[in-house]
Length: 93
Image: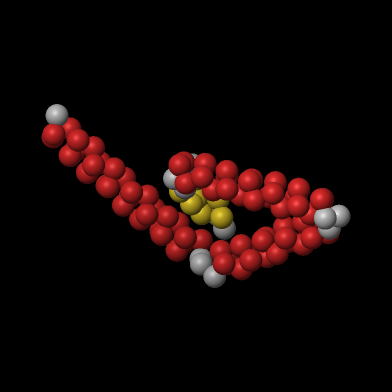
């Protein structure tokens, strides 16, 4: 999968995306339930605003070009490891 940031397509490993989606959704559901139970609904929105602000701050510190390059290199490295492991399995058969 790819995400567009600053007119750059950033490749994302599908397994990583699934794991991140599950983790974020679980956290947000837990946060929502806790803030409702404690009657602190504004805290839920404060968390969302701060997470947005912090995420943007971190991503803005990395240019879209650099982020694209980093993710491409990480995906290539992961693919090489997977191919190497598959070759070892096939050789042992």
